[in-house]
Image 1 (cartoon, rainbow, N blue to C red):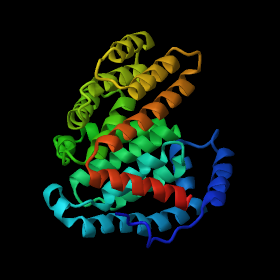
Image 2: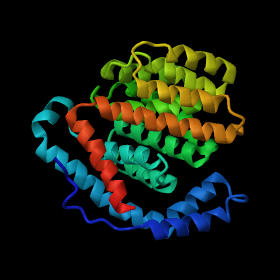
Image 3: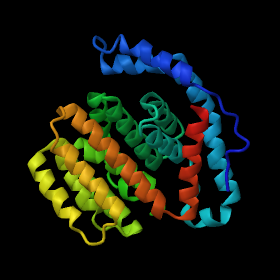
Image 4: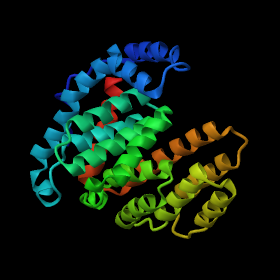
Length: 290
């Protein structure tokens, strides 16, 4: 099943480069909020957002129409979810700017508290990946402390693992150990990877605390007999980066990139056919539109 065949695609690589060049000259003197405003005013952002506003919603519509029997059991695939998923996918070395555009669309289409929680999480994650740590933390603090969101994080259908991944990934970056472990516990339980909460804890410590402690944790995880060869390789890669001589900033960037890609891969591999196909279609979309 694919919802891509009827979608018009627009090549935006040239305008993306224009946006990067435009913003790079202002980066040293402008605040994060000013850089964000410049990005939203840029031609590439507006063009990409206009295309995605229709195309990604069409993908969600296609699944809701063609997979109605499955979705009756787990709930419809909302546009907020697909745009948040797209934001996560785009942040994996594709385009940090367009990842922000997708998170903005996710928020614009959120109609309830659960949708807003996911959208704010996607925004926070996109801001972290862009290097806007102050704005990212403001979003993360908001959803963690606002009483309106007190019980929302546990309310997503268990099949929507990508929701737990986005929320958990923000918590890892923000040092919110309790939320990180809770989210990755749900994921680990659903995909039969019980060591995922331990890995989330190790990554949280790596990004926010002691490298020595995180290395001990990662080494302990690497001895889990349930790990396959690919998983051992990725954990070894995380250990190598954690103890490398890279600057703290580059170390964080590399660790989060490896971890984000690894987590999405595990979820895609173990998700239901419906969500695996949806992630695949969104990945194909990024390849055709950019």
